Amino acid sequence: MDSFIVTFWGRIFSTLKWVSPFQLIFSYLPSRFKTHGFVDVWVLLNLLFSIITVFLSTRFHESICVKILLIYAWLRVLEIVVYQTNVLFFDGYGKANTSSPYRLRSYRRIVILSLHNYTEIIFWFAAAYSYFRNQFGLYASKLGSFIGATYYSLVTMATLGYGDISPDNDYGRCIVLLHVAVAVFMTILILARLVSYLPMPQTMDEDEINKSST
Image (cartoon, rainbow, N blue to C red; front, side, top):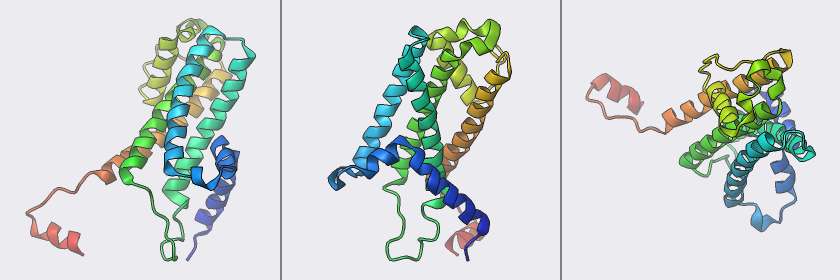
């Protein structure tokens, strides 16, 4: 029996996936290129692209090119969140008993891709912190370097909260709040997938053996 709340959010995220650059490109690709290999290359190229964007945002702060790249950065972060949410909750919903049930290419692959996405988000937000460094008051100079921006993004992504860099106004706080929300989601997602991938250790407890076999 379908759940209203699952169906409701499933339709929203099914619509949101069309906002992503990947979905638009993938839908127009010839069928021979619509492979898992294309997805892998897409993830690797975007990771490299995010690193380059951090460098450009620190060196060419006012460039129109950097502004365009940051718009793409927000779209790409949204794409990652929507994709991961669909894979986790909605892509296989209601397909378990169909003639062609939904299946992942491999659990190992999805974990590795998730780690790539996690790292990519760090660099996308590092680029944003560098570009919007004036929203961080006295700490702006620290975010003007590749290391400084990446450091703050990694600390925020890991939710460590050292407090050595902090936003100076509500606009900067909104960027950090968005980053933390994405960070918590991605951290929980990756940990859940890593734990599920670990093999269950053998046990000598008879009750545990009976429970695992039922």
